[in-house]
Length: 252
Image (tube, rainbow, N blue to C red; front, side):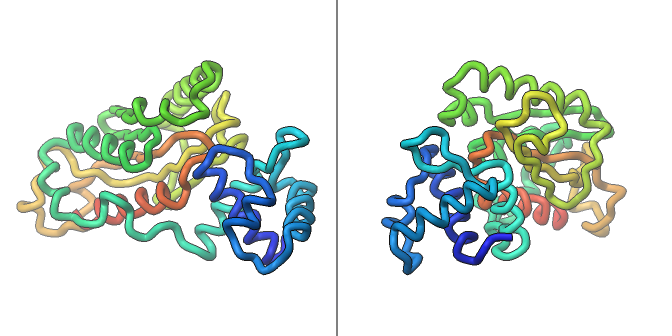
């Protein structure tokens, strides 16, 4: 267990690292956030968080980075106490979505592309019945600093290949699930995170004007939506956007 003050400092470090992609120093934490304590106390608390395995120091003169354990605490705190961003950017209204439902495959492509643009990560959509998988967002994901290294790109591709091979066997529920680093059940995934959920898409030739009940699940096709990217992804925005999209699909 960590104290409330340590929790605030940890969440601050994660948020700052997500934004900057640079190790977070005690001076930066003290400068940008008013914890009501002196810099020396912040350094002591950061050392305790390091010893507890929530953050680490890549080298002696550097600031701190979140570990998988630190990211997990941050994400669990989002779900339990702070709730991810409620209004997902780009998914706040349902008036546009009916216009895009002309074909389940085209709709899958449209939604996946929109999700990739909003998240700035790779988005993946899958239809179980048609065995069709669609990926979008390569041009977004390679802009992230982590992908300046060829090895990271190769590992990311290998993780995606493993994901695709096992997608029909994954036990995915309608609840949003977040896999962080080594939690991922795929090879070469220790530097990446996956946000995933099972959902229902409109079926091929679906016409919302002819459906007597929008909750009629016989008019829906089971599938998966996922966001894949570096561990330093914006969990708050991505979880919130995916959650908003799922709620929007339920209303169509």
